[in-house]
Length: 512
Image (cartoon, rainbow, N blue to C red; front, side, top):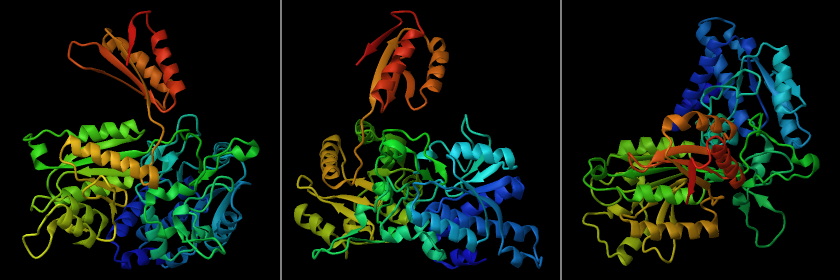
């Protein structure tokens, strides 16, 4: 099978791992369900194109395993028996439609064309076909990926089926590595600067791929695979208008973005490196402060951890978190000592080597007066190719950014405050960090017990699923504090009022 051979013959270790994991998920699904019970949602985009060829490879390997040494295996390579669903939209790009139908013809896809919205169309299809699971090209950064796993039952209110997400943990870089390594066709729009394609009303070429032409003339963009930072994949997706039919939601990975939040909530991981913190020799003021600063600009911290001064530990954590979060913020473990493993761990996570950086070495030598003690300046060894130095006039040494990983040099709160302010200023002027709407919060205190408030709070979370509802005590005998938080201030207010209505007047008091 040409896809399997192309990946196995390449030298990209990360891509091979991603490929093997995705194919394993596909083979598990094909073992669980009959071929008539599975379907594939195809929309002509890059992610679903990747999934198409993974399914071709996975099905071939599945059949090969079932019918080893069977002469019909080679013939099966020409067939793709998995039912393919295409939701045709009047707002789709003509290039997407053309590519979809050309692909269906080339690979003999059994195409079910649906011209209704995703939910209605799916309900109708599942009534007439024995479909029990659907392969989706959802990736962790997609709006519809929240709360999903590789096998996830459909959401409440939807027809019952199993969502199978083989590329859930793939990054933008992984998608393009697969397409280019496999040498399979993809939609021509991606060669014109489009990096994430929705409808004709909300999608433009990514400005980060714009090719400057001082003499004027034709506007040109570099191809999508040249976007350096996958975090900016959706930079060409405009906010949807509410004018007439143009307000209909566009399809994303074959599924409508039905439940997308009106206000974006980017996610981050915060990672500290230091044996001294782990063993309790020193306190860690930087991690809590950094988490609070991210919260203040509207980011959700999904993971916070302290790691050993160990290259493999750093590499494993960075590789995992950079794939599932918009940004990763790292501090500690940076320096010339043998125990400073952060930069080497980051380099290993990205599959690059540490190499001398003359610009950074000049800062260390001329500004800080640093002198190396051996035949190289150890602190000037940075992850090759991927490291970007973030300059600011108030920083004696620039911050470092390796794709979506930002490295802080701070060792105390004063230094962190200075570096953070500089980072925010750089974000405002260059867009390197997404500044979103901050969270709105309400804090209600009560002398009631956890048992008395548990059921009403559980009901509140069902009625306001996009809000965070929690409770804590500052001391063992102190009052219970109920927290209601979200991006929509109106919903936060409604949820707080709903809490008060469930109890006798005076049971709660609001605090700032």
